[in-house]
Image 1 (tube, rainbow, N blue to C red):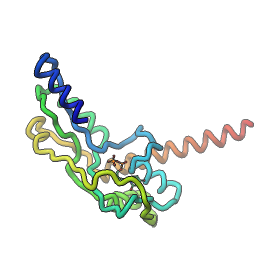
Image 2 (tube, rainbow, N blue to C red):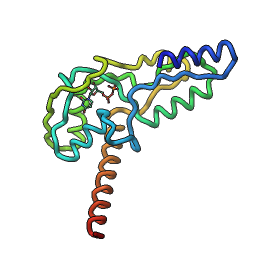
Image 3 (cartoon, rainbow, N blue to C red):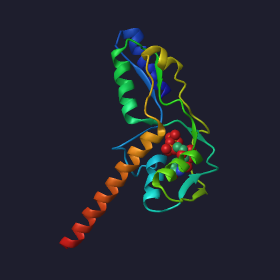
Length: 174
Ligand code: UDP
């Protein structure tokens, strides 16, 4: 990622190419892939199946999660600006993976246990410093994690129901 930023900046500086550099943080929302191992679809899938939420390690590692419409809006605004430096685009609210699990359980509406297991934890903490985003765009992400998670949960639930009913009708056809 750093190399891409450097080469992009070089093209801008030495060849006058109109460039933008956006640093996207953990993004989520409807239409995300369900089985690529990222934490939000993993937790929601487990909640929908009535399974424990699998937390890698102690769950105290932190992330900030940005809802897809905010990510798209931020990119659009940046493209319309004349800012060429790298710009962070994410939510600046940091939550631990334990907290995220509790939020998913709350949306599911029933008691779900957290199971701490070995797994790749990635960086210990990551958050978006939005000082420059506010200065440059006069804007920052608007959708709270609670709102975004609720919409994403519902969307994933619909996908699971549709997949199950397709399977059921395929089985009936046999
Ligand atoms: N994570 C977890 N359980 C899972 C999937 C992920 O505890 O089933 C944790 C993972 O260890 C990491 C965090 O959630 O600390 C975010 O993981 P993700 O792969 O979504 O994003 P990244 O690590 O690239 O920020």
